[in-house]
Length: 359
Image (cartoon, rainbow, N blue to C red; front, top):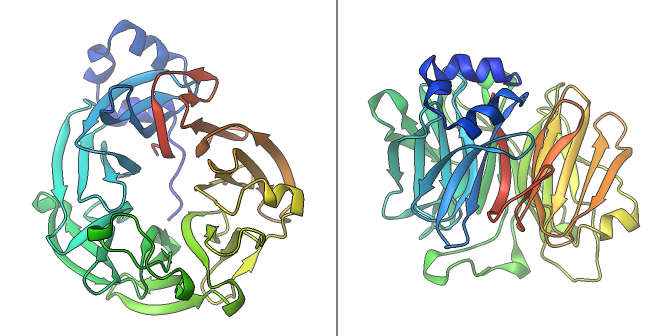
């Protein structure tokens, strides 16, 4: 499914008549001047964590507290609900109401699971799919949570790989694309990587009717240390993915590619000077479907760039320390950094890896 952009008018309609009236004057003024609303996880100067709703200019509309560090946010297109996921190997996902900023439900992972920071709602809003780690068996799983019964976990199916990270709906919600990073990890060792010499990264498509494996694309042997991490969908239904290379520092394999059902994976041929600027690490992938652009960022390299989805041509590049969060805006992208920059604004907050445009 390709979700429509949510305008300010659409956000207010979803939020309800009382939302604007409940805002402080500065918040109401910020909302009145924006064309879109975004959500992003942050860490404050006091090392407290939360998720903020912001305008494209970086002005805050609301803040929601999180119990620990957050990663990505997904939204329900059928209601004013969103979910902030813990950064791996975290064990919480907080459902919150975007119209009030109030927590709705704190989802806790099962004792033998942890979350990978990503999830997605079904097109009808009845299910929440969450990427999870069966850490004792080093197996990625997709957890199924029933929204109507208070986000109760009702089942799961294999992700057909390990280190399952980002997930995306495909073809109207019939299929699920899965990025399996291929790195063996266990919460007893924190974020330590236990199998760098024999990683198993892959890109997978499953049928959501029964969890059946439809396709699996393993990385070729010469780039087995290319961990597949984040994804987004373009206007033609191609899934774009970004990678993080765990191999020799003097190697610089391509980091941005795409695939669709029934076709092979293909990489964009990024020129060497730009490619080296990512320092073998893509932290975020975002598509601007209206503009026909895909953007990737690297906090390690301090660089982000945008490419045409049709040709792979580089159209924009910026060097900026700590950049990672990206989201589409009308003409290009809004970006955030670990140093508090969000668009043209600067705050004391350290923004996490992702920005979600609500819509």
